[in-house]
Amino acid sequence: MPDSSTTSDTQTFRPEARAPRGFADKRARDLRAERAILEAVSAVYERHGFEALDTGAFEYADALGKFLPDSDRPNEGVFALQDDDDQWMALRYDLTAPLARFAAQNWETLAKPFRRYAYGPVWRNEKPGPGRFREFIQCDADTVGSARPEADAEIIAMAVAGLEAAGLPCGSAVLRINNRKLLNGLLTAAGVETGGQKLAVLRAVDKLDRLGVEGVRLLLGEGRLDESGAFTKGAGLVGKAVDAVVDFVQAGAGGRAATLANLANVIGGSAEGDEGLRELSLIDAALTSLGVADDQAMFEPSIVRGLEYYTGAVFEAELLLSTTDEKGGKVSFGSIGGGGRYDDLVARFTGQQTPATGFSFGVSRLAAALRAAGREPGGTARGPVVIINFDQAHMGEYFAVAGELRNAGIAAEVYLGTSGMRPQMKYADRRMAPAAIMLGGDEIAAGTVTIKDLDLGRELAAGVADNAAWKAERPGQQTLPRGELVAAVRKIIAGGQ
Image (cartoon, rainbow, N blue to C red):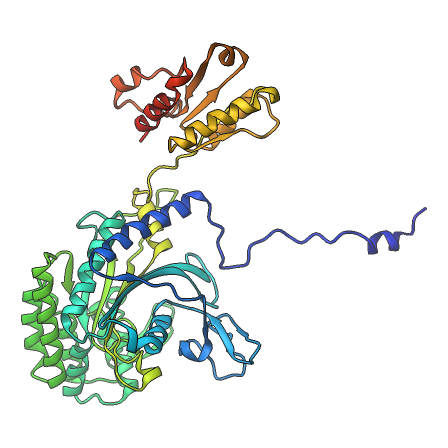
């Protein structure tokens, strides 16, 4: 009898097949959707004169300047490792910090302003959750080196055009715009000078959508007790200061010109506030010239974003489409992108303020939003034409057919499993193949080929009744001369699109 301990000790270790939390496996549907969005948006950005830039996945940790703790190992918020020269490197957590480093490093050789767009994966060492990943794809467009408000306007107009090109029809998303200088000027006029109190006011304003005007009023004052009994300390404003901020966040009047007029009455002539109004007025004029309507890009005083990051104009893209989950329940995506002016980022490297403005959106999030709205990015899944494998002796003929289709620009594959015909047809259907090609001994001898229209079969099985005349002309299975193969398959593919 064998020694049980020896048997146990020599057992092969088999790891559990599992993906790390916060990292998603993406199949063809997801990759096709992301590719379609990126190709469409990139074309828009390039038409606006922005050049593509791809920086490395890693940056030196001290160049990132965010998420980094006061510790010897900077691996909170970012994924970091130590290089062989003892310098800490971290996977980029966004595409803007690498841009700031690149601009500072190459400033003398760049055509200025420097206009670039970029896309690629970013990584965040944060607790994952529903819809919150540690790795995801971002797409950015930025102008570095122009302080003109028209640079902000062009980014906004480009974001509007990019989202529409990605699959959001006109009217299904809106860019909401504000300027941090407006509220800063208002608070200065109200006597709010400490940074902590200003941040508390900004956080209160940022909760307008969730808490409403009265909830914001409480947070501007002493504080608010929520339904759970938890108390949130307020900003400590009193009297007219609270009223002024509330009037400010309610100044949005739909049209950009009307909102500007309301804001001018509320701001009250502070120098910084007037500067913010001037910048918004120039943004409005540029957007009007660019053909961006009020319902595509509007001024919204309650938009805050990046409490300690943005220095001027800020903007946020909000999805307006009705969206549902896979079970038909309503789901809210809200913000699908945003950006603004950040004039201090490059200065971290150079010591000199360099104006910059940009817009960013999460590609996977936008793809999910489009899908939830019934607008599959990249179109319906299309698999390859599948050539049924009847006989090993005819394998050369099967590959010849596959080559002929591929040379004609049609995706095709020869079935290389060991199953019979029925499982092969099931395989082709599961691959969403538009057609299956059957080439037996009789067809080879006669110089013919049999084609089964799988797209038509799926439509008939689903009870689709539109285009009845077209479908009546499409035989489910046909045998044709070999020379007519490509034309027949193209007709099937065109009919299923």
